[in-house]
Image (cartoon, rainbow, N blue to C red; front, side, top):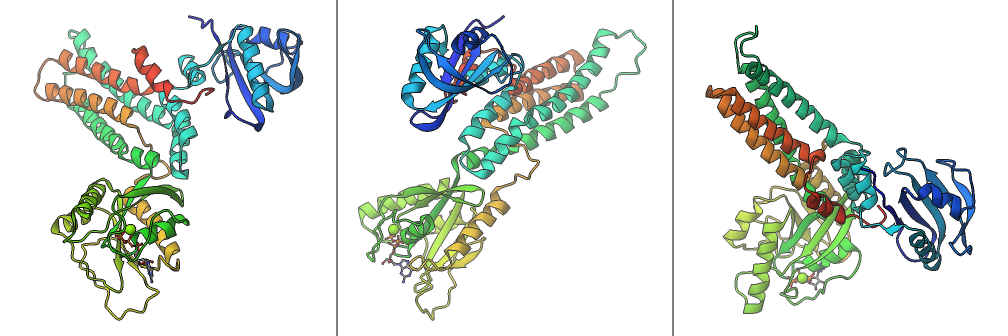
Length: 452
Ligand SMILES: Nc1nc2c(ncn2[C@@H]2O[C@H](COP(=O)(O)OP(=O)(O)OP(=O)(O)O)[C@@H](O)[C@H]2O)c(=O)[nH]1
Ligand SMILES: [Mg+2]
């Protein structure tokens, strides 16, 4: 059914800028071009300088416009992009004029939703458009752009075609039992389905990287009071974010900030120092530190080299041994004869530095980047990272395959296995876009920017 709406929106951030881009898509576009720019020539994909005339024949601005004839456009419909001067007064006047001429203001993500509905993008690519805009680190951007190129869709199609071949095989025996087919043998389908299960497993496993890419790597700075944790946070950030003092127990609550190191986004969290005997408020702070430890992707354990033997509660030592940890031997600017042999179950590396003078902080930055590469980032240039939504659909698909395998292995009726595999196809199809539920689609596109 043809969409009779014509939508318009500002595609660039609101506010003052050199240029602002207004997008329009829908059936009114050809008429708009003729009336607004007073031309009879509709030349697609050609940037043209012209005056924008309002309905009242006022000249609103001198602009550059490009007309796209559908389906060769982003949305698949006739579309128009107007580059005007980036003054909100001009932008508002043009948008108001467009609504007077019959356009409607677009909802967030509506242009991309149209692109999806009109078959220009599959749903994973539409999601990748959002991720490409919102990516907060180079790594997240690389992954989003890979997805935008259609990599998940291709992988999904390969899985679907394996599934279809198994269903076709099974249905041949269901539909033509009397025909001259070789004796029914489930070994082939069982083998294909088992391989498929492993492929889905591999894809589901990549969803663990989604949060790391989107939210950043939760890096918790921990250690004894006065070890120099807050000083280290400040040194890493290059600004005085946390309060520093020579009084042990200065940091009571945790605090957080973000930095980019290499292609990654790190969320660095400074915590209250851990020690055995303390007052009530400090104990509450320590409990919060322990909670942060549970949530951490990576730990920086800070030790004061002039006092290198912290005694740690067993509970913490146990947790530490499960997480990638970097040991920081701080205050290396002070001469210390004490051997640095902290009794920590650190399975990462150790870095000597001075948070006070900044010496060695670059080495720590490099060590953090390397540790993420080695321990957290299982993403190679060809790895496809799927989202929680994709993983949920694949888990449903796996469940159906397991049911089908059980049926085939136990010699139960083939029809039942075929039914399970059709359910499996539906689950996998949800990933690239066979979503019946309009509400789910609306929810998905509502997290986009307006004008995208
Ligand atoms: N000489 C020297 N002093 C340092 C260094 N790093 C921190 N300090 C000092 O050590 C004291 C404690 O530093 P903080 O950064 O507040 O230590 P903290 O680990 O956050 O302490 P709490 O919040 O109490 O747990 C301050 O007096 C700092 O100036 C360093 O590299 N060298
Ligand atoms: Mg502190």
